[in-house]
Length: 144
Image: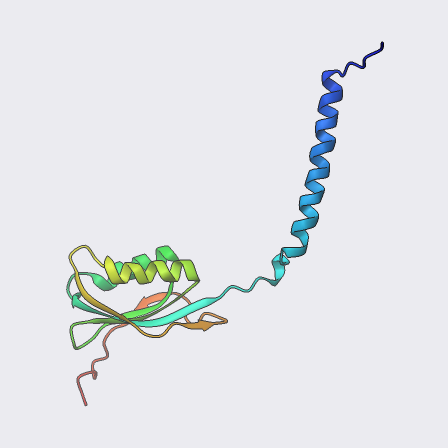
């Protein structure tokens, strides 16, 4: 009786063949469902906001500027005559949502956020701001 003895080399060769065939099967299954990389469209979200509470004279605008720069969010913010901070943010979904959460719950270290009101979220094809800026209140803002 003759028995065949497989060597370590034979077994590793069979393993390689098995995994290669498995890889091909997985590649065939996924290639149908994957979208081409060059077709991806990145959505830009945009909304206005107003923050109520102790947000003036506590460096709220400057902390907002730094957070926006860190997250890659664009837009602006400014003080209002009603002791609030108003602004607009634009960004890709993850950074946009992170900025909204920061505005609503964190703010500057010495601020107190009583309420944060966001306008409706719009989807844009392109950014309308080059970066995030702090706007100055115009000198004739009190004139009506």
